[in-house]
Length: 367
Image 1 (cartoon, helix red, strand yellow):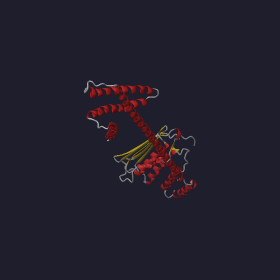
Image 2: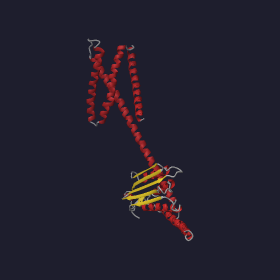
Image 3: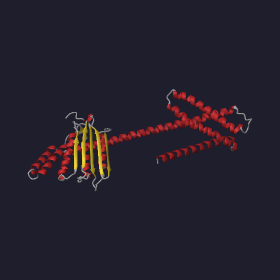
Image 4: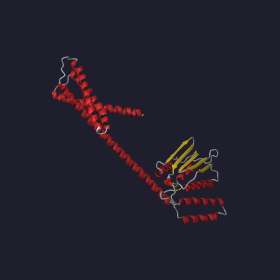
């Protein structure tokens, strides 16, 4: 399809060139007719054809070779090259015209005298077509440069708009985080009261309250100045989330969770990993004991690797697209050029892999 598109544009360009030359030749023929008042003879028509072949050839040689070659050079090299190419082009032009004159005139009339007036005419025509090709080349070049500048400016504006959009999303995310924080004293006093009420009657319910308390404690943990939290807190949040859901479903969920490596006081964007864990619970088939889902976190230096693997529920509510797209936007905001994130769905299996370089800027500088 791409080759067909290129061929189509090439043929369109040929048609435009042919049309312009037809108009130009018609214009010059009209001027000759207006000056002499005579319609050209068949012999004059042959003269027109052969001379225009040389003139048009000269035009394209300058347009696609001479001027581009000169434009690539820097002063004073370009001026020297111009002084060489233009006279050489003129010698080639006169030679070609002399050959045309031989076949048009001297073969038919051996006594034909190639007088100086023909050389004067050739000088004029050579300069004429050289200047036309120069005007078209530099006009075309200026237009292309202007178009390139406009394109680059549009790309810059689009980049700024995308950056502004990501910053707005970041601000909304941080506002949502802060708005979700409850009064900690009221929250934990209430949970403590409920825990004391249910401890004797339902130990499992009491454990659930403790886990809920820890999860809520995580949600009100203050962010660092860079809008991040400790990686170990995020991982602990994931552990509590999984444990809470196992308790909810009587430990029937087929899911493994593995963490290797040392957190080393690294920082991470809050709720980034837990969003991907929630994705497993929402779309994964967690009752398939023969093929359990897995969540694996490994830390090597400042490199964090997060992988999930799960079979997909036969009755999906919606696709993964929106949530994962939001994760991608957050990664671009917090970790530009510092992450690799990809996922794929195949044979009812969903695999996800995220690698982030939590660089020195993401280390805890103070508690």
